[in-house]
Image 1 (cartoon, helix red, strand yellow):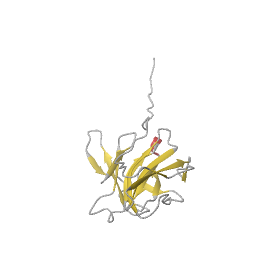
Image 2 (cartoon, rainbow, N blue to C red):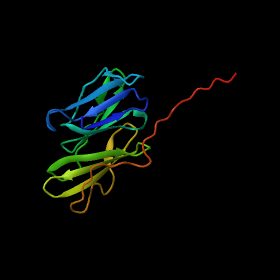
Image 3 (cartoon, rainbow, N blue to C red):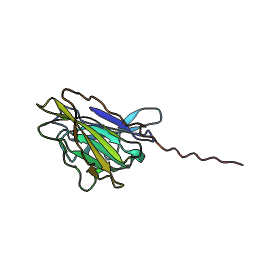
Image 4 (cartoon, rainbow, N blue to C red):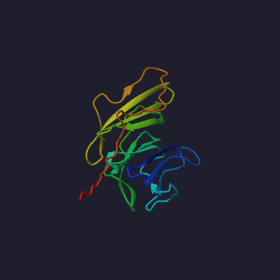
Length: 178
């Protein structure tokens, strides 16, 4: 895979992109992570992508949704259910918000509250990159924010982006006081 992420419970690893080239794989792979770190195929995976060649993948906060930035410039959102895998939400994939021809997304990030998705896009033959920003509603649907995408100055290359503060996982602790 070109991109991987692990859910908050650290028991599911997902991956997107890969063999044998960027245009050949439309699968989202999932592996269960055992407490000792061993991996095995997860039920419901691999899941078929709803777009051409997902390149980047990330769980949203709470692990309810899985987001992919796809080679065709679209962005996909999936509901994640144990034993079922990743299922596209209504309206997914969401169309590219960038000029064509698109070389592909170079990176993506989700803010800690899970309300914004940032995608860096490499626009082919223009020596330019754009940054798309999408609002994420409670059901996972994406809508471009005003003035998105923005074009970055010529010859700026974004290899990776991160949102700060990063996604955090809530932990429930039970205390038995006697």
